[in-house]
Image (tube, rainbow, N blue to C red; front, side, top):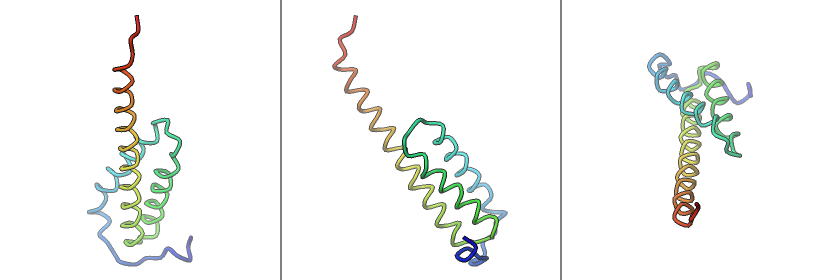
Length: 95
């Protein structure tokens, strides 16, 4: 990883601290859900941590985009689950 990651495209890491903290918090919440694709948020967290350690602004932008992609996948899965459960509730004729 050290071959590809190096300090470039300097970003003010003090100002991006809150954005990265919120992103990590949202990714951590998605890791609690029992979905089979928890590897995507984990990889996004790893990329963010490498970007912070090496002060790599390009990797930080790429990892934030990966985190957004992961959150969109999770949101889509949750919405599909809610729609399916609503559909199943209409069919339920329990006691």
